[in-house]
Amino acid sequence: MCNKHKILTTNMVSEFLPKRDDYANKYDFGHTLIIAGSKSYTGAPVMAVLGCLSVGCGIVSLCVPESIYALTVPRVPPETIVFAVASTPNGSIAVKSVEVVIEYIINRKVTTICIGCGLGTEDETKLFVNNLLNLIYNPHSKISEKKIFTVIDADGINLLDIEDKQITSLKSQHYQVILTPHLGEYSRLVKLTSVDKNFDYCSEILQFSKINKLVTVLKGPITIISDGEHIFHAGSPNSALAKGGSGDVLSGIISGLVFQIEKYNNTLVKYHTVLKSALLSVYLHSKSASVAEKEKTKFSVLATDIVKYIPEVIKKLFYDTVKR
Image 1: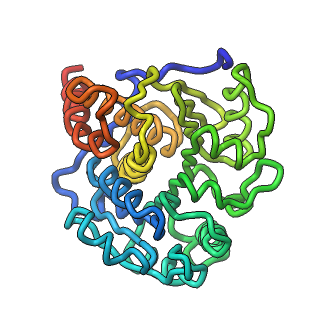
Image 2: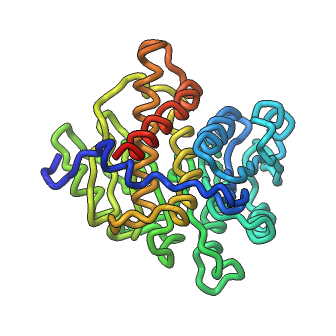
């Protein structure tokens, strides 16, 4: 690790909490479209939705392959809008679904996309992910006038096309994207082959984020967050988070907050919206796990338990901010 980092603190992230306007409507708090799931991974979309709803997102839509639509609808909260797109024979999202998703983004005023949780790694789904991102961030496409934030997680990261550490479908965007890989996903993405315990992930993530003009959240015992200029270490190790689904919840939290922070956070700290969103979300996620652990122990905390304690953490953060 390097010595350039700052430590994520309560005082720091409290500055990023978006202000709620009681005269606003649901569109003012963002519309997040979560694109997730496959026949092999039916729980990931549900956990991403739960994370997103828990932080005040105005509208949450969920796009799943038709192979799991009937299974998914009863499992998500009734506040969720669920729609299906074409599946591959193996039950993942088919490439011909790109145009349907683009039309949905335009017609339903989507502000944020969360893509990748449980998508699977079929070749056709790889084409879907890269073609979709190419269209969203192509300055000449019909969607280019809209400012769309994107959170890319899990298989979404595994499916990205990359050359010399630059993600080809994101070349035209400028700090509208947050990547949330764990160590294994990041190593596969950039083809790191020889990494030992002394490897300088700090400098690595700084460089990668700068090249791609995005924010990277490198998940691990000590999570590293960087926009290529600033770098932060988050929290202390907590094995309660070392459970399947906790990353899906984090992706949902980030995607639920980013538009709210863009619109309602006026802090004097001049960080990119995507960096503020990542920092606040990682804090909420970590603190919620710590609260859950006190009641359930590190052994028994599930990813869905993290969601249950987010309101408690937000409430404390909000009232601490008011007192100051």
